[in-house]
Length: 249
Image 1 (cartoon, rainbow, N blue to C red):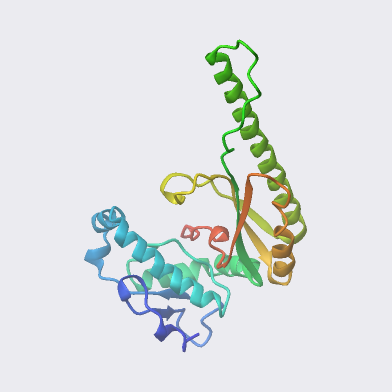
Image 2: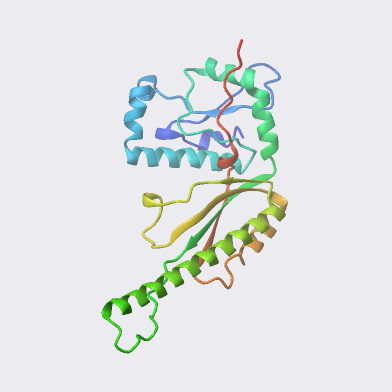
C-alpha cells in the first residue's frame, strides 16, 4: 500500500498519503488523505466550487481514481467527495473514537464488489392503426392510431416489468445486499430516447460474481423494447454509509 500511494494524486493533483493512529499498534483502519489549503476549502469556497461543473467533474474523477486504485489492493470504505477534517488531529480523533465502527463496515465489505444494474425501456415505434372503417372520420382514424401506439407502449412497460423481476430473482441467488437508486433522467442520461426504469446497485460476493453476470446476461432475452445494462466492478460506493458522528464525551 505504501508503495502504491506515491503514484496517486488526489483532488487538484495533490499528493495522497496514509494517516493512521501513532504508535506501534495503529489499529486496523487508516485514512487515505490529501492535505488542502484551508482558504480554498472553507464553506464559501466549497459552495463556489460545487457550482463549477467542470471543477466538480475533475474532482469526482480524481477521487474515483484514488478509490479504484486502492480497491484493487485492499478493502476500502469510500467517503463522500469533500469529506473534510480541520487538521490531522481532528481526523485522528475520528479514527480513535470511531475506528471500530469503520472496521465493522470494512469487514462487511471485504470480499465483495459492487455492480450496477439498470433496466431501460425503449419508446414504442409508431404503430400501424387498424384499417379505418369505411366512411370513418379523420378524427376516428387518429384515435385508432393513438390507441395502437398506447397499446405498444404499455406492452414495452410490461416487458420491462418482467426484466426487473428476472433481475430480482438473480439478485436473490447471488447478492448480499441491494441499494435502489432513483431512476436516472435529464442530464444524467445520454441523448438516447430510452427511459431508465430500474437503477439498482448490488453487493456481490467475489466468488459469485461470474455466475451473477452470466445470469444477468439473459435478463432481457425475448423481451421487446427492453435493455438491461450491467456496470462494474466498482468499489462499494453505494454501501459505504457516511462517517459515523463523533461520540459524545
